[in-house]
Image 1 (tube, rainbow, N blue to C red):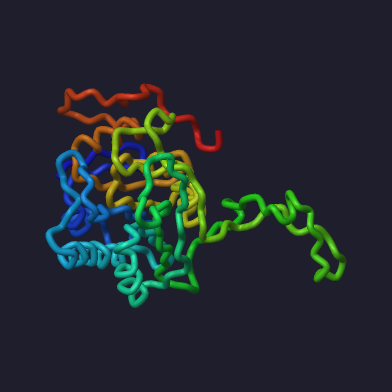
Image 2 (image 1 turned 90 degrees about the horizontal axis):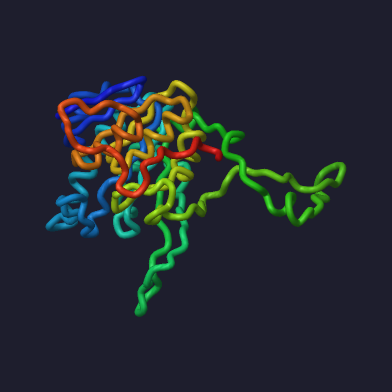
Length: 277
């Protein structure tokens, strides 16, 4: 296990179960984002995302989920991503342990080849859970989006005492449309399942406040930590592969001692633009 830390951001190279048990205090985390291996056969720098039997994958997943529940503060939130095949198991498991407030669909278009003998997949599911349904953070005013009924169509709401145009902004529904990160996009990193800045920006703005601690269990391209830093949150990120940890050290501007490896992106040497630009 290796730990790199700077300015309220901690990057940990190690196994997620070991790190959760030994390095993360109970009731200390405001927001957890979990984007684990999906058990669908992807190659993560030599780690094959494929368990021999599905029950082994689920048992492993339930182990770190149980630890996550302990690590969350009383008003904490958990966002869990998974494959469409596995999400029903996680939904059933978590609904007895947390309150599932929303079942979110992250929709994206695809220019690649789609299935020809069935309907191709163009979304990934996300569970939004809280520890206490009467006490949790949700900054609705920070994530408002355009309400086309009022902003574009200018329809009148005649149910009001004084009829007026519908609101021009609203809290997003549970279908989110963000483009996937593609090769040579400004935010691209060399990682097979990189999540977009826009996706994590919405999650972190909604379910944490400045100064709060955000935990990413499977950091990958370290988008969660990068966004947390931009939004003045603290972060802890766990990653098993040293190759990906190097991405995190560069994006978080943390010096990786005892390493002579180049930390620059193979595609872009420039750091990202600030969020919102």
